[in-house]
Amino acid sequence: MLSPYGPVRIFTFAKSLHNGGVERALLRLIHGWVDAGHRVTLALGTSDGPHAGELPAGVELVQIDGAYFNLIAALPGLVRRADPAIVFCPGNHYSGAAAWLKARLGRDCPPIVAKVSNRLDRDDQHFPVRQGYRVWLRAHPGFIDHMVAMTPAMADETVAMTGIGADRVSVIANPPGLSGSGAPTPPINGSDYLIGIGRLAPQKRWDRAIAALADVARADTKLLILGEGEERPALERQVAALGLDDRVRLPGYASDPRPALASARALVLTSDFEGVPGVLQESLAVGTPVVTTDSSVAIRELVADPRHGSIVPTGDDRALVAALDHWLTPGRPRPDPVPERGHDSVERYVRLFEELILERRLMQG
Image (cartoon, rainbow, N blue to C red; front, side, top):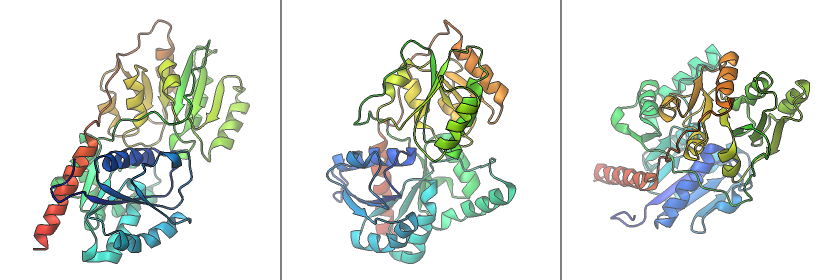
């Protein structure tokens, strides 16, 4: 779908192409934009990572080959050279770069559209950090032209936490997940198992899932966690200390986890905070129930029916074990598959970009 003014020139950026959900969603959007004939410039701090081979041929790639701060410093010059009509900030983590870009370019800065990728009301933070973060969020309307939330509840939270006008917030889901280019991860044969999918990062709190496994009623249940990250050594030590070496598997990043996901008894998500976890939607799409912490205002929108899964309070270990026992009960029926959202997301983003481009042109006379 091309703009009446021709292809939309979109500039976006990311730290790397490693296996974070923000970057995976960005890749899906880029694929859609390029396939529709739009011009996309992607600036990367480093282009390595498991998704490096998934960039479409039509994208203009700019690689900084340095730390994330080097990418931020280079952004104003890169945007001037690319001369885009829109800058897309793909997630909360990158809003500091958007603020720097706006400060350096001023009135010459193209409209900036920023996606809200994670929970904004961060009650997991210590009090001073939380208060500082709230002040930072209230500054966003000064450098972000339009924000995109992935669900209505996230849009309400965005307005409340940033103070931005509701007319400057759109609700657009992420595009549906796609199977990766690598070999599919097979199920664990001959055993009931739980599955977790995501980075081995502090946010995900996989230690909760491992501790819960030690307490579930069915002592033969296994846990498969697909992902990679800095928490691997700590998690491996925990597994050994609990004597769970034969029940917990940490095989690393999985390009295509869907075969393993479809055969699991339940998906487990034990995060402190999330945005709209794509893995929940992918799990429900293959008929696998979910057990998740109440880590985002979007969770109850995704798991709206108790037949689809269980939501437990973040940090409530007993509730987590009870929910796992519920879904591990022999004969427990699996939910009917729930279609993934976001099949029109690429087109909806383009329509939003077109509106902002036209608005900017009218303002400039």
